[in-house]
Length: 231
Ligand code: DX5
Ligand code: ZN
Image (tube, rainbow, N blue to C red; front, side):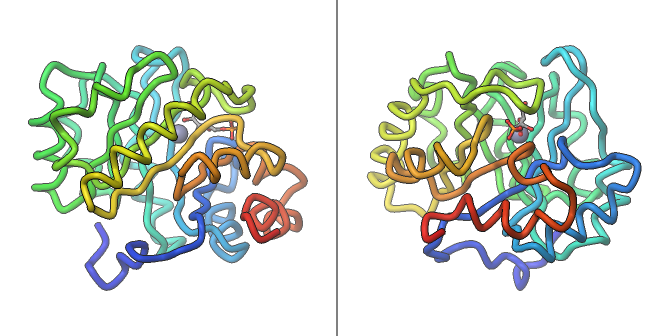
């Protein structure tokens, strides 16, 4: 778990890039994390899948703990698992900084978010493409990050679903009304061609897997830079 000194995201103006290690070479995950850190990643996006909530399996807390020492940047952990609550302490112990859950993963979202915060992490909610903005109506005070899924969760390399731009616009308004510094992140099918539309709609963070890891380590810095608006 990160100490406050390492929590440097708040107040940063440029869009944050959070490469998803789902597209990394799993045979050398520590080196891959170091490579994206050196290439300019702002966070490390970690997709945890259970083969039940989504039709794919990845990894859990022991793997996160093992790669944690390869970067000092925040670990942005996206849980696609159900149930969640009994694993929250394990993800905190593994070194997650942000822990994002789907509302459909359990019956008591508010309690889950409070539990994440009580374990020293930043709570987040992820909305599937079909999940409405209203799922957040009574938990806005509890979240530090909102993740808009612009593909159906489970796999990297899918195509961006354009209808999610409207959801991003609605969430930007909803966040601004709170006056709180909530990160608005988009995840799925992001590329240099569609990142500007997501940024115009209001995101402050972009997850990208295949677009960052294509071409191997020499290409990572260019791939990350190509997702930022000034490129
Ligand atoms: C999908 C994951 C995404 C995915 C993004 O379930 O949440 O983080 O890895 O991969 P790309 O950028 O390839 O769509
Ligand atoms: Zn993700």
